[in-house]
Amino acid sequence: MQIPVSLLIALGVQQLCQLIKFVSCSIRDRHLSPRYFFSSGGMPSAHSAFVTALCVAVGVRSGIGSEVFSATLVLAFIVIHDALRVRGTLQQVIHIIKKDHPEEGGPAARLPETIGHDAAEIAAGIVLGIILALPLAFFSLRFVPGSTGNPL
Image 1: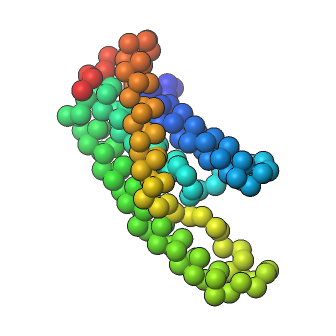
Image 2 (image 1 turned 30 degrees about the horizontal axis):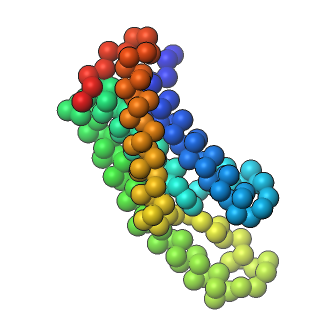
C-alpha cells in the first residue's frame, strides 16, 4: 500500500511544527521534555499547519476544482474553528478554574495547561502549512514517480 504524497507532506509539516514547539518550549523553560513534542496547544498550531498543508498539497496535486480538494478545505475550516473557538474557550475555562482553585494536588491541578490555540498560534500554523507545503507539493509533481497531478 502506498501512502498518498499529500498525506506525507501534511504529516511532515505537522512534525516540523511539533519540533519547533519542542525547541522553543525547551529554550523558554531551560530543559528538555518529550511532553513538549507531544503536547497540543501552543505556538505554532500543528493542527492548523497539518490541515492547511493537506489542503494545499491536495489542491496542487489534484487541482482546486477537485472534489477531494473541496473536502480537505471543509475539513481545514472545521479543524481551525475547533482549535480557536471550541478548544480555545475550553482552555480559558480551565485557566479560570485553576485560578479559583490553586491548591496543589487537587482536581484542578490535574487539568492540562494548554488545549486550544489563540489566533496568533493558528495564524502561524496556517502560514507554515502554506509556506512548507507549496514547494513540496510542486516538487512532488515533478520528481515523485507516478505523480500525474493537475496543478492549480
